[in-house]
Length: 157
Length: 66
Image 1 (cartoon, each protein chain N blue to C red):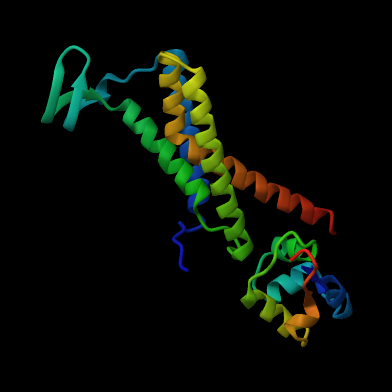
Image 2: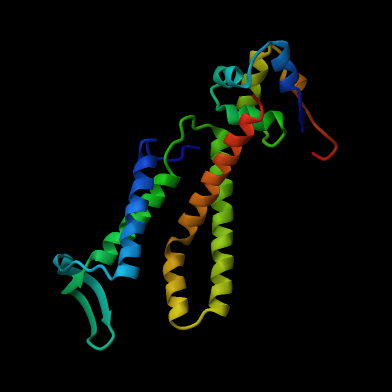
């Protein structure tokens, strides 16, 4: 079975992209960062506006700052989680797979809990988190597992 | 599954790192196999047996739980 992984240099790139995305995200949330030059004409396959109605296959005006942040988050997490380790062997592959499994389970258990306990705008914010939930939890679990394995080596010396 | 990797490694005076390099895996993998945290694939088991010039059955042994 051949699985695709990014080259190992992508891991550092991934962490960097993630940090950049996090800074931009916090900046928007806390300091209301806005960049008017990012308001551009984009082509929308489908656009539903609260009062303006629905459009298909149309050019619309949109600030693409949030799109950029989302793409940075996704690429960052994909690169940091799915790039080759120094020695990519079967044990790493198993670690990867079990981290992914627990990430999917945890994410959807959280989603079930969230759908029962969060309402209105709170659920909306939570749904935003859930967009990245699997990738976030997977990255946390995978790198934590690698760290624990590395730590247990030091006891062997 | 029990294994005697640690014993054979001592007999051949190999460190975990040296054995890892001989069978082209990480030190973490050898460490996990020795602690029975990870059961290696058949390919890796055969490679380990080849290093110690024994049969796979000499290195690995089934337990009642398996």
